[in-house]
Length: 159
Image (cartoon, rainbow, N blue to C red):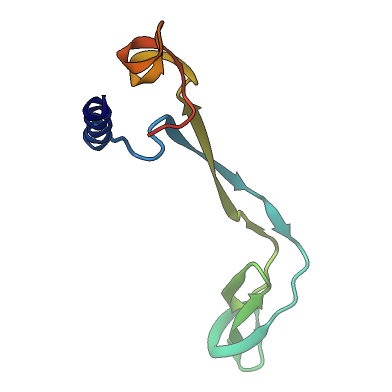
């Protein structure tokens, strides 16, 4: 009887070492990552402008021909200043040039990209009740005896 108990205990230890599962073998984790991308284009119209800098680049001479003669001749030389004007704000920077340049309107289309990652984790656990191979010591008719067989069981621990 004592040898049978030692043999049964040794068989249980060998079975535990051979059929050992990871600690959370009863759980199955499924991770799904959903990525949503939202692209938004805003329209910003600027209408009031104040020059940031005004720089005279050069002076061009323009010859103007007159219909009626003037005391010295029929043409007149006119100096035209060529300027470069810069406009600057929080969301734009603009430089234009020419004779008497001005900015009438400016439309800016800032593009905003928003990416949202949603992680969904699903954990499924092994059911607590099952049918399986059993080995142990139990009451069988006339007294306590070793038992090996199939039976209905309740899982207290998962190996």
